[in-house]
Image (cartoon, rainbow, N blue to C red; front, side, top):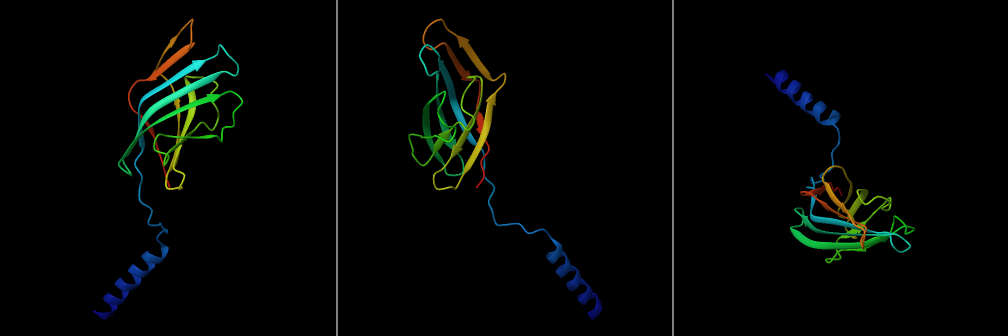
Length: 148
């Protein structure tokens, strides 16, 4: 009987030692963006894209709005504060096509960050002869996966 207990204990210890180490990191839910709009202005130089949306973070139960005006030539590292400055918006690759660009959401304290590419058939766009030259609305909820 003692040998069975000893074997069971050794097996449990071996399993614990060989198991991969995982940190106690909690899983984060994606941030949801609704009412995502992008408007492209090319009548004046530099060309500018205005982006605005509502942000909902299920990890913090916070909601805010974000607006940014990105012009060709600005650095991709430029961060724009949302209405709640505990969230920031950036465009790591810039915006050279109003229907295809990367959105990055982060928190200045480093607790969350993530990015997602906004492209595809969910953009519903209209071209205009006036100002702006193109307006686009995302059809549905846009999700940005975040991690710590």
